Image (tube, rainbow, N blue to C red; front, side, top):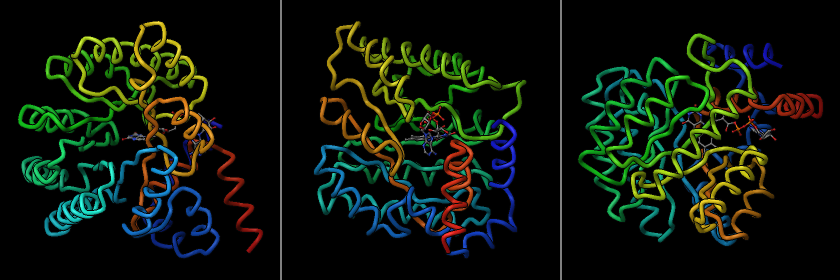
Length: 309
Ligand SMILES: Cc1cc2nc3c(=O)[nH]c(=O)nc-3n(C[C@H](O)[C@H](O)[C@H](O)COP(=O)(O)OP(=O)(O)OC[C@H]3O[C@@H](n4cnc5c(N)ncnc54)[C@H](O)[C@@H]3O)c2cc1C
């Protein structure tokens, strides 16, 4: 399993595959399980459907490592349009952005300006989430996040439980009253900086989750959100919330579109905050291959589609 994960994460960075695999009909059919479509309209329509089930949404326009200034500027412009559309149709949808899509590789200052343009357009005080990318971006992402948070309270950051450093990053962020989306982590990282086995990642996730919730209970954390599909872990965190005497509505779980749909609905019905991250756009290859790496069964699903075609 670890070997397959490694191979898939390496494949997610392969330019030839990115340019060619996306043209194959069975690959396109497989990705449709994880995204409602490539357009913003498709995402908006999925959000309307989820809202009827009391499930909130976060949109992300797929893309990363933009190397051209105009293109990065246009990505930020696109997010301004997304926010305008969300406001027009009165959806409680939030957005989540990748800093390398906003020009981080070109200049952190330019990237910050793009991020700030987006945050300023979010007039409802809803959260603008910042994704966490591979480990070489963690320092600069946290710097930009802190800079943004000092000027705007409605910005949240993703932290990855597989990194040893995250415990300290969390402590460092708390005086600023951050909003945290805790995930396990989706990139290929070495054992020198990340827990190499799943059980250790899960345990660290739970520890970090309890620390985040304790901080939220005393007002030191703006929002504590758990980005995971791990049902056992969600139950454990739910039990902790109950033991702390916190209301069910204070448990916020975010999942990806199309994964653990029954659990998304169960959480919403029980009064927890259930949110689905809806990804859309044409640049889905690396993101899709990271989803394959997370669950070997997804690779069989892809192969089944290949043989069915
Ligand atoms: C809302 C959200 C935002 C995220 N943002 C980031 C980010 O900014 N940076 C980052 O590094 N990572 C991000 N991730 C990805 C995350 O790091 C994990 O790679 C991913 O969530 C899988 O881990 P898990 O917590 O679901 O647990 P796992 O232990 O991997 O999975 C638990 C169970 O969930 C189900 N499951 C998990 N993944 C899949 C899948 N792809 N397909 C089908 N079933 C699956 C399976 O039943 C599995 O047994 C995000 C995830 C979510 C949900």
